[in-house]
Amino acid sequence: MTKTAEVILFPRHAKNPAQFRTWLASISSTFKKYLEGKGLNLTHQREEVLKCLLSAGNHMSLDDVYAAAKKKDPTIGRATVFRTLKLLEECGLAAEVGSADGRTRFEIKADRPHHDHMICIECGRIAEFESPMMERFQNKAIRQHKFIALWHRHEIFGRCELCAK
Image 1 (cartoon, rainbow, N blue to C red):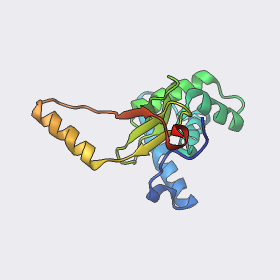
Image 2 (image 1 turned 60 degrees about the horizontal axis):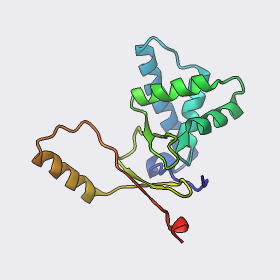
Image 3 (image 1 turned 60 degrees about the vertical axis):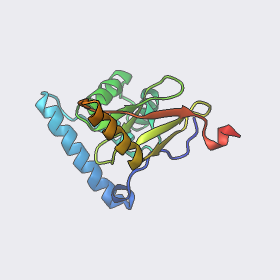
Image 4 (image 1 turned 90 degrees about the vertical axis):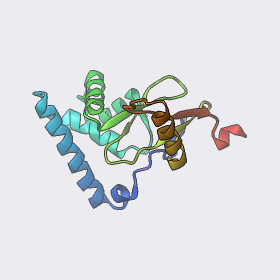
């Protein structure tokens, strides 16, 4: 998979290191409160997994997160990374993203506008995009069918510009 930046950390989070640290602290606090509600602690291993995901420029697989966290803390286990990613999903801070190779990828969901993904089946790159027109069409279809939508995920699989050549 290419290492070109994929994840768009919207400007209020990515402008400077101080803003990023404030965002990290806010998300860490949310995660800590969620864990406390489940009778769990925000351990340094869980915090390291969260930091890896927050600082990633790409959508990361379990193996990607594990490798990045292991560099920072050699004692961290794969099971800890897996469980932490699931906890981050449960509390709404992270979300799964599909991939061409069938390995689930993860991204930070908190404080980011809704967006969808275009996934290259050749190189694996995942491009984020927003489409207000597509959202309006989906909302119209939902109303017409009297459907109660809880969430949706739009993923388009194909070839990126470089691989299409």
